[in-house]
Image (cartoon, rainbow, N blue to C red; front, side, top):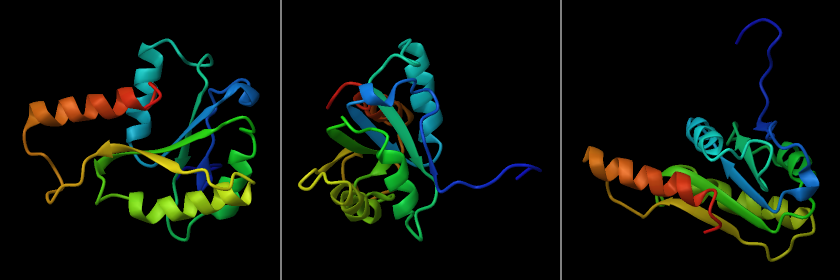
Length: 148
Protein backbone atom coordinates (compact mmCIF):
# COMPACT_ATOMS: atom_id res chain seq x y z
CA UNK A 1 0.00 0.00 0.00
CA UNK A 2 1.21 3.46 -0.83
CA UNK A 3 1.69 6.45 1.43
CA UNK A 4 -1.58 7.96 2.59
CA UNK A 5 -3.60 4.85 1.78
CA UNK A 6 -5.42 2.68 4.29
CA UNK A 7 -7.15 -0.67 4.39
CA UNK A 8 -10.93 -0.79 4.67
CA UNK A 9 -12.62 -4.11 5.44
CA UNK A 10 -15.80 -3.08 3.57
CA UNK A 11 -15.90 -0.77 0.56
CA UNK A 12 -19.12 1.04 -0.26
CA UNK A 13 -20.23 1.75 -3.82
CA UNK A 14 -18.85 5.18 -4.68
CA UNK A 15 -20.95 5.37 -7.87
CA UNK A 16 -24.27 5.40 -5.98
CA UNK A 17 -25.45 9.00 -5.99
CA UNK A 18 -28.67 8.46 -4.03
CA UNK A 19 -28.62 5.49 -1.60
CA UNK A 20 -32.33 5.98 -0.89
CA UNK A 21 -33.07 4.72 -4.44
CA UNK A 22 -31.08 1.48 -4.11
CA UNK A 23 -33.34 -1.56 -3.80
CA UNK A 24 -30.74 -4.24 -4.57
CA UNK A 25 -27.41 -4.74 -2.81
CA UNK A 26 -24.82 -7.01 -4.38
CA UNK A 27 -22.09 -8.13 -2.00
CA UNK A 28 -18.85 -9.62 -3.27
CA UNK A 29 -15.13 -9.84 -2.81
CA UNK A 30 -12.12 -9.87 -5.08
CA UNK A 31 -11.52 -9.08 -8.73
CA UNK A 32 -15.09 -9.84 -9.78
CA UNK A 33 -15.88 -6.28 -8.73
CA UNK A 34 -13.90 -4.91 -11.69
CA UNK A 35 -15.78 -7.13 -14.14
CA UNK A 36 -19.09 -5.98 -12.67
CA UNK A 37 -18.03 -2.34 -12.93
CA UNK A 38 -17.07 -2.90 -16.57
CA UNK A 39 -20.53 -4.40 -17.20
CA UNK A 40 -22.20 -1.54 -15.36
CA UNK A 41 -20.34 0.91 -17.58
CA UNK A 42 -21.23 -1.05 -20.74
CA UNK A 43 -24.90 -0.88 -19.74
CA UNK A 44 -24.54 2.85 -19.06
CA UNK A 45 -25.74 2.38 -15.48
CA UNK A 46 -23.10 4.26 -13.51
CA UNK A 47 -24.96 6.56 -11.15
CA UNK A 48 -28.31 5.49 -12.61
CA UNK A 49 -29.09 1.96 -11.51
CA UNK A 50 -30.71 0.86 -8.28
CA UNK A 51 -27.98 -1.67 -7.50
CA UNK A 52 -25.12 -1.08 -5.06
CA UNK A 53 -21.92 -3.13 -5.32
CA UNK A 54 -20.48 -3.60 -1.83
CA UNK A 55 -17.05 -5.18 -1.51
CA UNK A 56 -16.16 -7.18 1.57
CA UNK A 57 -12.37 -7.10 1.57
CA UNK A 58 -11.78 -8.82 4.91
CA UNK A 59 -13.44 -12.16 5.49
CA UNK A 60 -11.81 -13.11 8.77
CA UNK A 61 -12.34 -11.75 11.26
CA UNK A 62 -15.63 -10.86 9.65
CA UNK A 63 -16.22 -7.07 9.63
CA UNK A 64 -19.71 -7.05 11.18
CA UNK A 65 -19.59 -3.41 12.31
CA UNK A 66 -18.16 -2.08 9.05
CA UNK A 67 -20.74 -3.98 6.99
CA UNK A 68 -23.53 -2.82 9.29
CA UNK A 69 -22.39 0.77 8.85
CA UNK A 70 -22.39 0.53 5.03
CA UNK A 71 -25.67 -1.36 4.71
CA UNK A 72 -27.50 1.19 6.90
CA UNK A 73 -27.25 3.62 3.99
CA UNK A 74 -29.49 1.42 1.82
CA UNK A 75 -32.66 1.68 3.88
CA UNK A 76 -35.14 0.70 1.12
CA UNK A 77 -33.10 -2.24 -0.17
CA UNK A 78 -35.05 -5.48 0.00
CA UNK A 79 -32.83 -7.76 -2.05
CA UNK A 80 -29.36 -8.75 -0.88
CA UNK A 81 -27.22 -11.04 -3.04
CA UNK A 82 -23.78 -12.59 -2.71
CA UNK A 83 -21.96 -12.89 -6.05
CA UNK A 84 -18.91 -15.05 -6.57
CA UNK A 85 -17.22 -16.65 -9.54
CA UNK A 86 -16.28 -19.80 -7.65
CA UNK A 87 -18.57 -22.81 -7.40
CA UNK A 88 -21.25 -22.66 -4.69
CA UNK A 89 -19.42 -25.22 -2.53
CA UNK A 90 -16.16 -23.29 -2.88
CA UNK A 91 -15.17 -19.67 -2.43
CA UNK A 92 -16.50 -17.54 0.42
CA UNK A 93 -20.24 -18.35 0.18
CA UNK A 94 -20.51 -20.80 3.07
CA UNK A 95 -18.46 -18.49 5.29
CA UNK A 96 -20.22 -15.20 4.52
CA UNK A 97 -23.84 -16.36 4.27
CA UNK A 98 -24.62 -16.73 7.99
CA UNK A 99 -22.56 -13.66 8.85
CA UNK A 100 -24.24 -11.37 6.32
CA UNK A 101 -27.67 -12.69 7.31
CA UNK A 102 -26.80 -11.96 10.95
CA UNK A 103 -25.92 -8.40 9.96
CA UNK A 104 -29.22 -8.05 8.08
CA UNK A 105 -31.05 -9.29 11.17
CA UNK A 106 -29.19 -6.75 13.30
CA UNK A 107 -30.44 -4.04 10.91
CA UNK A 108 -34.02 -5.13 11.56
CA UNK A 109 -34.39 -7.18 8.40
CA UNK A 110 -35.29 -10.43 10.15
CA UNK A 111 -36.07 -13.22 7.75
CA UNK A 112 -34.21 -11.58 4.85
CA UNK A 113 -32.43 -14.32 3.01
CA UNK A 114 -29.18 -13.68 1.22
CA UNK A 115 -29.43 -14.67 -2.44
CA UNK A 116 -26.61 -16.38 -4.32
CA UNK A 117 -25.26 -15.83 -7.82
CA UNK A 118 -22.37 -17.97 -8.92
CA UNK A 119 -21.47 -21.32 -10.35
CA UNK A 120 -23.27 -24.49 -9.36
CA UNK A 121 -21.57 -26.82 -6.85
CA UNK A 122 -18.66 -28.61 -8.45
CA UNK A 123 -15.90 -31.02 -7.46
CA UNK A 124 -13.24 -29.08 -9.38
CA UNK A 125 -12.18 -25.46 -8.87
CA UNK A 126 -12.31 -24.58 -12.59
CA UNK A 127 -14.43 -25.80 -15.47
CA UNK A 128 -11.29 -26.37 -17.59
CA UNK A 129 -12.85 -25.36 -20.91
CA UNK A 130 -12.37 -21.73 -21.92
CA UNK A 131 -15.65 -21.41 -23.79
CA UNK A 132 -17.66 -22.91 -20.91
CA UNK A 133 -15.87 -20.66 -18.41
CA UNK A 134 -16.66 -17.53 -20.44
CA UNK A 135 -20.33 -18.52 -20.76
CA UNK A 136 -20.62 -19.15 -17.01
CA UNK A 137 -18.80 -15.91 -16.17
CA UNK A 138 -21.06 -13.94 -18.52
CA UNK A 139 -24.15 -15.46 -16.87
CA UNK A 140 -22.88 -14.52 -13.41
CA UNK A 141 -22.10 -10.94 -14.40
CA UNK A 142 -25.45 -10.45 -16.18
CA UNK A 143 -27.42 -11.97 -13.30
CA UNK A 144 -25.92 -9.45 -10.89
CA UNK A 145 -27.80 -6.68 -12.71
CA UNK A 146 -30.92 -8.52 -13.87
CA UNK A 147 -32.85 -9.26 -10.71
CA UNK A 148 -32.40 -13.02 -10.59
